[in-house]
Amino acid sequence: MIDRNHPLSLTRQSEIFEISRASLYYQAEPVNNRDLILMRLIDEIHLKYPFYGSRRIRGELKDKGYDVGRGHVATLMRKMGIEAMYPKPRLSKPHPAHKIYPYLLTGLDITRANHVWAADITYLPMHKGFCYLMAIMDWASRKVLSWRLSNTLDASFCTEALKEAIDRFGKPEIFNTDQGSQFTSEDHTEILNSHGIDISMDGRGRWIDNIFIERLWRTVKYEEVYLKAYGSVTEARQSLTEYFEFYNSRRRHQSLDDRTPDDVYFTTLPRVEAAA
Image 1 (spheres, one colour):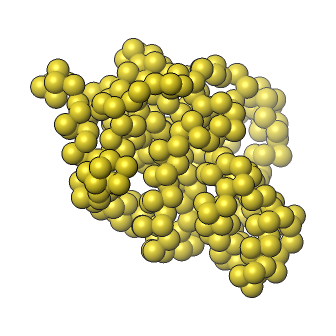
Image 2 (cartoon, rainbow, N blue to C red):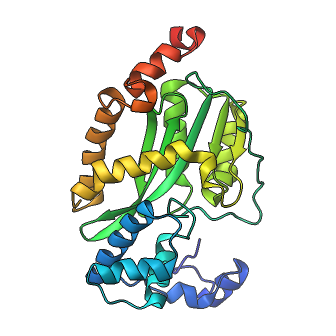
């Protein structure tokens, strides 16, 4: 957007694009090692006690031997997008200019593949740094249809995952997400609308509306992420590729009568889609 080699001054360009001139000179400071450790611990505590705010999380950290102020805990929680009563990092913030769609899943009996897909984003700790993981799941089978990693929270990695899921598995009747700006963006909703997919969005603060993908995050972190210290996004991508292959094809779910997501997905897929 801003061209530092353009004849127009940076001041004039910032005025035209209505952005702060100071932001042109801002350089993000790397997160120090201690804060990365604290963020990792906060993530674990939050998964276990989603109703904990900064005061109680500070107490848990103190019990683990980390003397940190409540204000600093709150700062790190904001950096991660975490809020009390959310069993996930609240990484997706609504955009005031984007359309919000109603929640369509109340009372709906979801028992077949490609009836409802759900998507979400979560914070992912690494050895030195962190990134964000986005995944699309088939609601009935819990099958992970596509996923992406990103260093930023722009909408592009979400639209890429959506396009891949549709290309590989057809389309769902309903696509459910939270009200985050990545999912309410025109690029994302245009893909859904162009395929005739009904858009459903959780109510503000209603984490229970997307409960199955919330459970996916808990599973992925305890069975994969927390057991490893990814050295880079590339390493994380390689390891998660293997994990999601295991998750879909070999990991049996008690809630699925001890069947795998692949088994449930392909046996409940409507015949017309399976034939395609």
